[in-house]
Length: 114
Length: 114
Image (tube, rainbow over all chains, first blue to last red; front, side, top):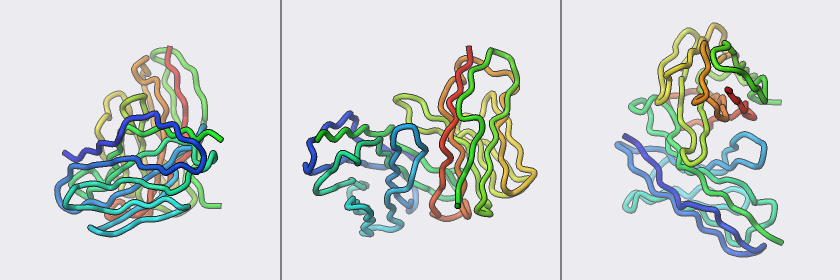
């Protein structure tokens, strides 16, 4: 079945540092890929998405590129802020063959210190 | 404001006492889903609904029931809760389950079963 593997945290960075959170996936067909963010005490919010190979999703300074050849969708940000502290989830949507659900990675806790 | 609401946000109950967690969305979405989030496991789908009166099992449906009598509501029912159902529960909705539309998440319900 579908699966998502993302780097385990926690990740602790200083403000203005470069961020990479690795995400790889296993899926049949052509899934859509997502990054969701969960701020403390809140539900998940969509951060960015990509629906086909070589697409780049971007939002709030975060970027991720759908790499089919390496089955990856790594999240990057050039300069993190304290307000970026949250849990980040990589997810894929495999379509009808997977109950139309999002398959999530286990999440990566990011803490940014001033 | 477009949103998914869940009630209650926090619940402590005892083994065997039936409970219902409500979920409502105001976006006229066809697709709704319930997930549970557990440490180290990410989010896992419990049940989903493609439309009114159409529901199906997700990955971890044991011990749960759902119904979809109206488009906006998708309650999660635990008829005889057990301690292993202690978890953080999220309801989500999407315009359609058949493509990679964004899923909107509720704020979560933290359930403790003693």
